[in-house]
Image 1: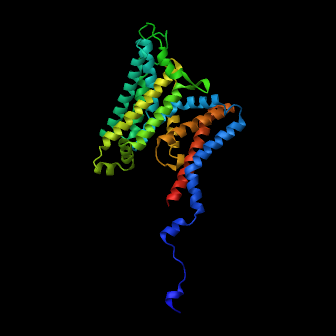
Image 2: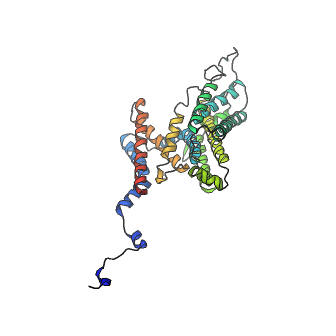
Image 3: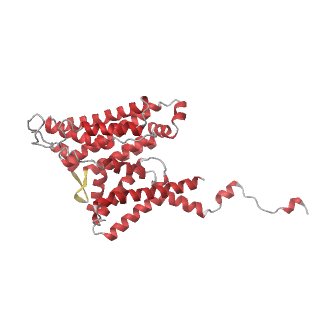
Length: 355
């Protein structure tokens, strides 16, 4: 038999191989890309059927308001994750800013502008110190920011001897605090804009949306943002290419600190006092939202859009559980379980798809 005609087995070209339908791979890619969004949609449908009023405009706005501060902090965490870091001090920066705003207006009797500037300066300074310790003292980011967290928790209680700050309180020296929160400052946390319905959209939700768009554009479409991703992906390669790696990492922590201070400002404006016990769950919820962002659209990397969706997911879950009268002491367990399952599902599929 002629050897030229013996083997009639067709040979696929690379183009033909790519053109062949691969149902298994396609299904995995769809699950990776849209699995988490499908989970979010499923939660919304479930809570809509299980409770009354969950899909009303008021309920939707309440969910957004409940996650607005958490979302802002999570966007700050995202900036540090982009450069391969992690910021555990965001919750304490937010509460320190809240206490500082109250102290400036109630005790020092200054106006809203001074209070806002002081808070932003605190956030930027703490972020700068975090970045310097991590980059130049070579302290691991988790340890550096954990130490800063405890430092701020203790520091914010010293001026008032561990008490909350409110008009008429007795100060450690025996005098009375006679200052008040200005109406302009309170409007940051309490004002509502009209949208189809009067007084529907809280100002804090608008701030969250604006900051989310800004940080998304900054990270995705500016050279500085792309360089931050390059630093997080491979810091040594970025350094060999001439990028000032330490500067980018420091700026990431400054951004995180400023975002955390904005969250503290909104929290103080919403409460109208410096509540020492507020903000206890800010860190955990913000970290959860930022980590969930990895799973959104199969990004497998920190990104502002995913973080915003993650914050919305946390808000939908907690609001739905509350409306179903689920005991508050079980909500953290449910939130953690759903987070772990979602991330395992996404990253397991992603790893299998990469192989």
